[in-house]
Amino acid sequence: MSIQLISVSHKTADLNVRSCFSMSLEQQKNCMKAIHSEEIIEECVILSTCNRLEIYLYGKDEDQRQIFKKAENHLFSQLNLPDKIDGAEYLRFYSGKKAVEHLFLVASGLDSQVIGEDQILGQVKEAQAMAAEEATVGTFLNTCFRYAITAAKKIKTETELSKTAVSTATIAIKAARDALGTLKQKKVLIIGASGKIGGSVYKNLLSDDEAKIYITQRQKCKKHASEKVTVIDYSERYAWLEPMDVIISATASPHYTLTFDKVKGALQSDRERVFVDLAVPPDIDGRVLQLEHTHYYNLDDFTKIAEENNRRKKHEAAAALDILENYCIQFEKWMVFQTYYSNLEEVRENICGQAKRYGAEKAFNRFFYTLRDCMEPDELEIFMKTLKKIGDME
Image 1 (spheres, helix red, strand yellow):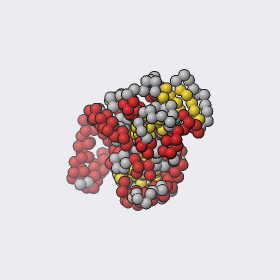
Image 2 (cartoon, one colour):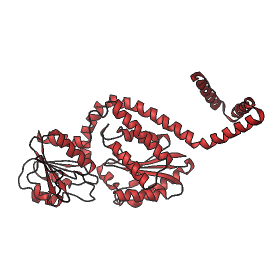
Image 3 (tube, rainbow, N blue to C red):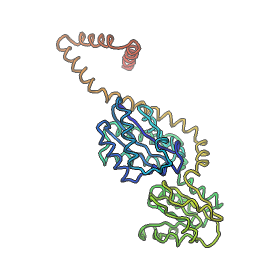
Image 4 (cartoon, rainbow, N blue to C red):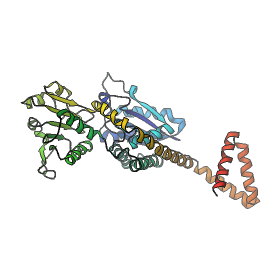
């Protein structure tokens, strides 16, 4: 029995391809339930973010090929890939220890485009919670995710990896500030401020106390209204574009929130503007870059900034890896013990039964000689050394 993983991420696919693998919450739930309905797949969790789509699975080692195939089939049944994209080309498959290590790296932010980014841990927790709600997860994946989350929390508290929090949101704000020189007294419109990434952008801008913030909502709501924040109705977003200096969109919409023709029609002056698209699939029609004095950034454009951050955090990443390795080993021990626990029960009953008949000393002698006869020499040596360690500890 082992854990398997199918992954598509920023390491294997660019933004255009990742957009094709984007699934709504409903699609994720349907896909998990369909995969879990397969007899050979005992557990399933789907993790879907802007930079990755991953399917974690649990089943028998001998069924591994079929597990991967069936999960892949259900995945593609939920997607509508263009003919020009061969989805299978971007899939990566992991099993056993490699799958476990990958989850630990993901949860801690070490596999992120921006190393140490502070959003992925929450997304990992939410993926596990959704699988629990849909009853597609059990003892093994639950425990694996729990160990990964605990390790990630320890890294946050014991290393500097997340002390200077760098995330997609902070990089987006930095890009806008660099393009305009400053955000002081600039007008920033956030489309999707109620979402995870949009909410993070909103909070970061509030704490900076520089820009004048405008946010869209489907219905007018006063809960965000203040001297610094203006709430506008989503349907009126084009009417508000002209005075804006920065427009950031981060929704889960399956279609554009801003199209090129309507943006062009809404803008009357040639003032310098920044459009930032933080969504997968894209929110903003990339052709806005054709407009004069316009800057446009999407997730792939932040790669260079992310690389600089990653270089600075290289030393802390090494310390984080040491923590992860320890937790990976702990989980592997738990999994081995859990897998063979029923055998331990049988051995215990056997020894106890022989002890009643022949006495404890003879029972243990029989046990050790049986081990000697059943094990290969190297296995026996490891076992005997382990016994010596236990003796030394006592």
